[in-house]
Length: 182
Image 1 (cartoon, one colour):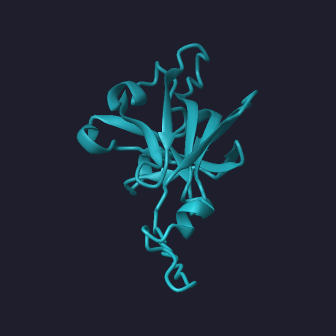
Image 2 (cartoon, rainbow, N blue to C red):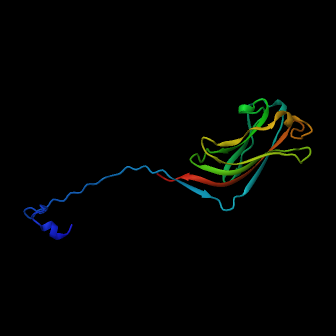
Image 3 (tube, rainbow, N blue to C red):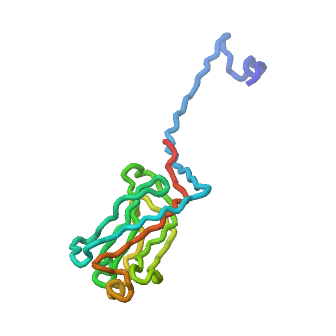
């Protein structure tokens, strides 16, 4: 306000050479949620091969490969010898699983390939690939119906040789999403 308005007696701001000035302070409690996405410029493909022995005596629902690192994250191949979901008893199931124990608040974007290797002929690998995001609620991605059990066990196909199979994953971490600090 300008000085002339303050001194104008008709306005009532100045009474008896005194004025009262007050300040209202308003504190807003805002909760801003945001995320920061980082895409890697030249993402590297990491390959992991796992030999699974003693298929005929496998009695657990699922098995996990030794951990391997891709894009600074820990991953495992998850194998269901008798299938999972709607493929129990009809197919093998194969998944890629991200270990989020050290970074549970992140989302990771990755291209990946899962493969059952033809150990006999070396030509007819069964391959499935996808692009997906991994985070707490969906830390594993893959295929319930990866390969029918009868094809997998067929000696001519070469997937199961001497009661062992070789399962492989190629992982390319493309980027990550991290929550902004609150």
